Amino acid sequence: MTLIRALAAATLLASTPVLSADLVDATDPSEIVNLARGFGSASLDVDGEGDPMIVGRINGTRYVVYFYGCSSGRNCREIQFNAAWGSNNVSMSDINDWNESTRYGKAYLDSDGDPNIEFTVNLYRGVTRDNLEDTIDWWKVAMETFEENML
Image 1 (cartoon, helix red, strand yellow):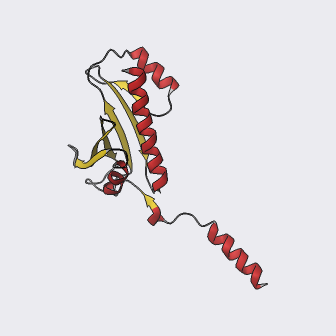
Image 2: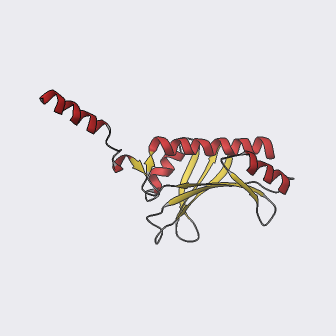
Image 3: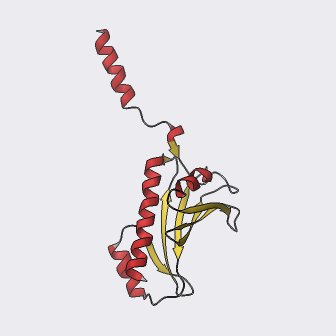
């Protein structure tokens, strides 16, 4: 009977959810900037609203990570990756084709007609480091693919 209880306890422990200490969320921008540095340069800054902001480069392309759902510049809930390119001959039809055929990196033309892509990530209650690292890799792929196919 003791063996059965030991096996049951082992099974229960193996199915226990990841502890919150193992999760990354938007309340700790320094943890996110450290992960971003695995893909290129990245530094922590503050936006015009007083919320955290990461400015980085991947393969020479500048991007920004904005933090949203913050309370007084802290305890943020989500992040949004954004990259913009100077004036190009990208049409609204090109943007629509991109958005229709691409899952990662919503595209739009800003008020100056410059192409942008953005990618919002909900980090409320946290995700694993591996998950967020994979998300940053998807952002990298989205930027590279946008540059190769749209610019």
